[in-house]
Length: 467
Ligand code: PMP
Image (cartoon, rainbow, N blue to C red; front, side, top):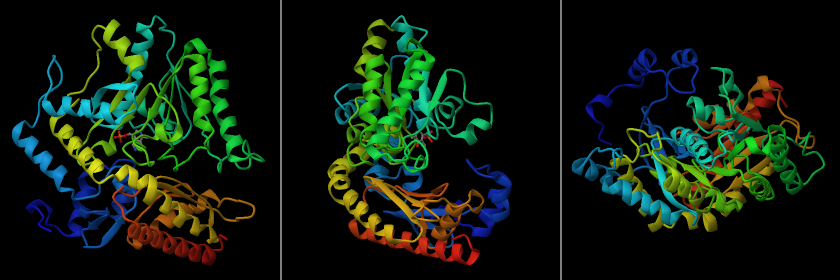
């Protein structure tokens, strides 16, 4: 691999420079400086390589985004060509560029029928910030300005800006910086495993799904239906631990939103573009959202791009009654990002990736993961398309968790890295979201690496007396 001159340094040199200058996201900076950063230098297909030349199976697609895998020539060429033609122009002041308008048209064609308009951002966080602005603008224009509250869920992840982190339900993020901002409420998540000794005790998954959805109805009653503007949720909670909801959950949420006239927002930043085996998670779970946020998979992460699909219910009001919408970003509709997205959509369609996940690799992954249920430390496995969770558990018959101070998930993650696999830990839940281009042989390879990591973690747990 030909590396540019700035990249020709040893791992130690990178680690020293990094510790001296780079404050990483979601990182304990002191701990990282002591340990030394991992340097990823290049990628191909489902693999990345580190600066010591080790090949690593990227079972997280970077951060849930490199859906078409690394090294797709069509995306690279699209970026280069657009940079030569017009590297930047804005979408303010009644202006557009061909890639931005072409992508808007293309997105309208691949999204459910209610979506004909898009508002572009550069990230999922900005897209969810935009949702708050749009939702409040909509209710103002509808003559109901008191409808301000957006209901979300505990442990949801909607981004890292002040507003998106507030919409999210991550306790650790709320603790830092006095979040959430006003006007956001949270209900508990439809997490069957997490509620196994409580609200889900004695219930089937489907029964629990209805119970969990009704928490929304209770919250609406508590706040007052005339004050609630919208409900937002990820079809499958990603960063919260790939929490696949019971099949009864989303239809009941839809019923409740319809009943109270509340806007439904589907955060498709992770689930969009085929991850769940359909183009959109809302299609997998049978909802009709009014707004839909996306990012990541729109360009497979090759360049930053995000946005909000705006359903006709909201778009019509904005367009017909609107006046100026006082919101936008310098990079809304960035031409290079939009050109890459168009090439990315071509790859998804030409390689029939959505269909492949739905009919082939998704079911095959579910089957291979089910084999892990014979492992002495696996309490449950859950998957939806090509996203999956493996719940680590101390005592399977009692479904007992490990003590939190053991940090069993982090121990397992360490064994993965040492063994050439990127798998993420969310508490005691190990999660994967591999590139959608993966083959059956690569599903086998990944599941083999997962089993090895589990075996090594179990051996460590036995030696340490944790089991
Ligand atoms: N929504 C969801 C569901 C996400 O998983 C993420 C990022 N992991 C975001 C929003 C925020 O996206 P970004 O990091 O691009 O701001």
